Length: 107
Length: 121
Figure 1 (cartoon, one colour):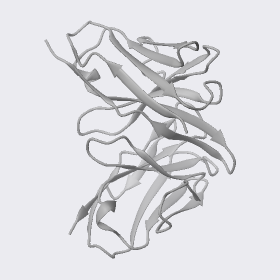
Figure 2 (cartoon, rainbow over the protein chains, first blue to last red; figure 1 turned 30 degrees about the vertical axis):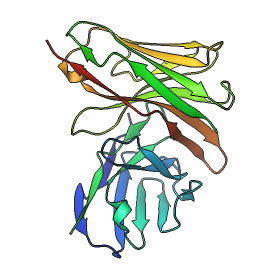
Figure 3 (cartoon, chains in turn blue, orange; figure 1 turned 45 degrees about the horizontal axis):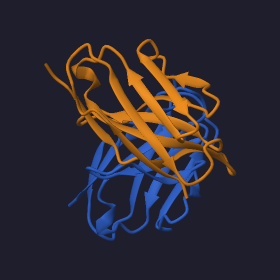
């Protein structure tokens, strides 16, 4: 199985801050990397697919970069509704696997 | 636009079988891989497996011995059975679509509302 490792596990930030989350795959996954936002009591929401493509309806303050094994999700200006847990997920080979999550909390 | 609605028993005893069903509204039933994903309390997301409209399945090897998925194309529904459950199977279970699209899109883009399943004696 491909292991996905996110860092940090959690972070505290203020509204307006620029936030970057990192995801590393245990082997190359080309650009088959997705990012999801998860809020308590809600289903995950797809933000970014193919490492850098913004899902329809997702605000442009979210962006993704990377290929191979190293990827980042950046929120350019954190908004109150962005406080959540973020997960990366590889779709290069089955079984599809997720990172352990990064919780973004209010400072 | 595809929407998913899921249901099933929320409280099970150890050794029982978990059964969940997900109904598909809108869209074509043959356009997607239909998946199940779970999240134990306080933990991350785990992919359980997927099924095509043809009935072809792929399961996570970690659960393969206990998982069975099925489809009912006439009702546009797909189901998950997980046998011999233990407390470790306590989780929120989600159905989701795995969509293959342009620009390296292979992603879970549509999700059901989730079902909390608790295994307790």
